[in-house]
Image (tube, rainbow, N blue to C red; front, side):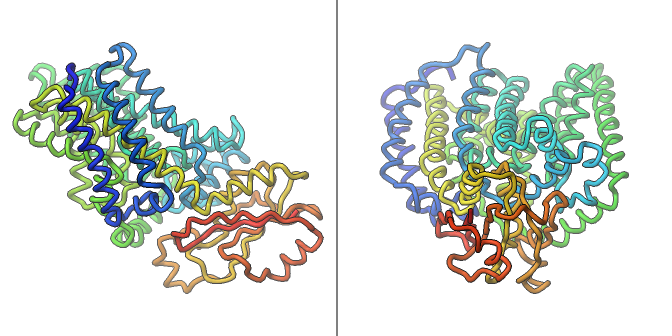
Length: 557
């Protein structure tokens, strides 16, 4: 991929990129993504505004296709470009209520220490179906860097950029420099990822741990030594990052058999020993944790089998949405072409890339948050496809068009829309409350009707944005029927329990925050008494008008 597209080819590709955008816009109703659907994003973004920016982006892609970063600086280039692009999204609010769980778990470690977290995870610290590795790391950040959202965002973005770099290293080690570099770059052609990087969730960290496990295991098989211990540790953290990584770790077996097939008979004994060491050491560490928390894991797995698995059929998103709207179509089509190219070449190493996307397709895993961790392999597949195109002039420009267009869609369509989702009211209210006098604030979550989710779960999210100590007493009321709770997509919110660190009684005259889901509802008598002496109010009621549940905040002070 050393040559660049000539003007004729460049014009055709540019028109194709613009036509692709127009087709996706016209058929945006087919994008059923639950968060960043094009039909949602373009209810805020303007088609023509984005269109003209895309023209500039495609022109920039053509100029960049004529140059290539020096080989020695490619890893640094990928790191800083990906970090800068993801940091643009730090302004977005916490978009997914699951973050309340990870915040709550992390705050327990912050307040009570590492020993308490390890003892009480699964007890006083209720993990739902979460595994402990990522909340543990978030808790360490809170304990040593302070309870700062931006510190967590900087950390997650670091993991994201390291994933980009590690993808480059995987491609470089298995094939060549160019394939690795363009695979790392193609991760930036997945606009959905940018909406997820700033969020206090486990999906992006899980992607990092899985990709790290793949690369370090490949290195351990090749070189042995300390890489074997590092591979075992990487597998350990991947295992306890998210339950869906358990299935994805099967790729390590594929790597081992491909490596073994590529080795002369005299070297296979060494490879067997290295793989055996990684398997035994990582399994031993995993079993220690599982044994200590066996009852917790049994309960979680039962919940996954009887609730989460059937629920995926109701909460899924189509592959059309994931691989054509949330991933640039050029990447998906190049990945499909790569299968043909690999079969023609009888390239056994290609199985390492193909395995994880094949699992997603074969098992019909239609929830993009469970797909995120395989995106590095999808990018490697696409890079493989580009590198095997017959016409060697055009691939670089095509992939740079994919990256450029995706970044523009993410920044100028997704981001304005994401900043209009009603959960931004928690962020703005928290920032406002920080300007008020006093150290404490009392929070109420009245439910004037039966909402989609339990409004009490918004309290930890509000806590993430404010420096004040929150005084909140959980009042379980207006609950749906038990059967409705069991089938709810947000069942965990109804099983919320007030953390012990929330104080019940604030000093008299402290600001009062009402988090509700309706405008103008009558307040309970208790809240009217609390606010009777507070003469000023500030209302935060931004609404995207799309989702059934709205997070509205009123501050009395």
